[in-house]
Length: 283
Ligand code: AMP
Ligand code: FE
Ligand code: FE
Ligand code: ZN
Image 1 (cartoon, rainbow, N blue to C red):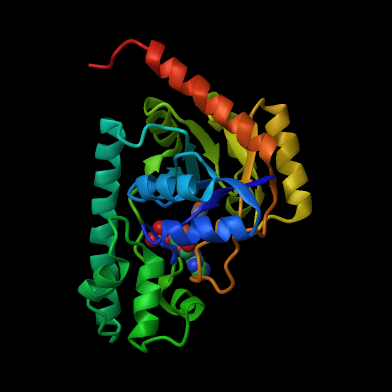
Image 2 (image 1 turned 180 degrees about the vertical axis):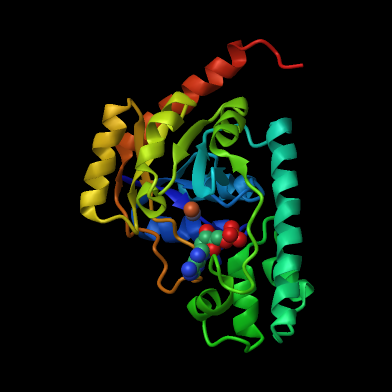
């Protein structure tokens, strides 16, 4: 049995519903999964129900955008309580920041002569955590761009004329937020962020795991991060990072993560939950 611990739905920048994800996971022989939408837990309840109906094991998940200096990192949270008040307050803040950023990016597009109203993006996104992929889709639907990738290349990539930087929490804050909700914190797709030098400090901040298997990692990168995880006593995880049909062919099922790693991650999250339960109440 295999697992996929990195998936996006239409509650962030994926195109599939939780039910479509569960059906695709079943077709691909996936026995355990986690939905890891960006900066939101909006899809957790529906994903849990869809997995239960499909006979798939489910673990709560999310992908937080964080920073170390001027570098962006993504921190995955697993097995946390999706109703934890501090977590919900922090997510509400970062969702507000995302909404404001969409407005600013649309203003930039308008100044560039591309008449895309922010409301068109919000209508299309229809979730609490809109992002650049929603702008890209709105640009394609409005025939301002020929394709999704073109929208990023011309306007939305870092440094392109409509790009606006995103306010982010620090990686240590992201890890603390996940631990505070009783979950395990995992560094997402490290090979894409060129952040090996940061791993010792992240481990010292309480990082629990490294996403060793990822659809954009080469086999040698997988091996490299498995060795790093072992060296730092961190759990190894992995997933496809499927965004549905947003980025061409759906990636679900393209990355095989051994079920034993899912079990280890659940154990680690269980330890964090126990630690939280025994920690003195925060005032
Ligand atoms: P945001 O969180 O709004 O900054 O958007 C980031 C998301 O945009 C990532 O999670 C990817 O799904 C997508 N993305 C980032 N860069 C590109 C790119 N060059 N081409 C296509 N999608 C991208
Ligand atoms: Fe994404
Ligand atoms: Fe990511
Ligand atoms: Zn992702």
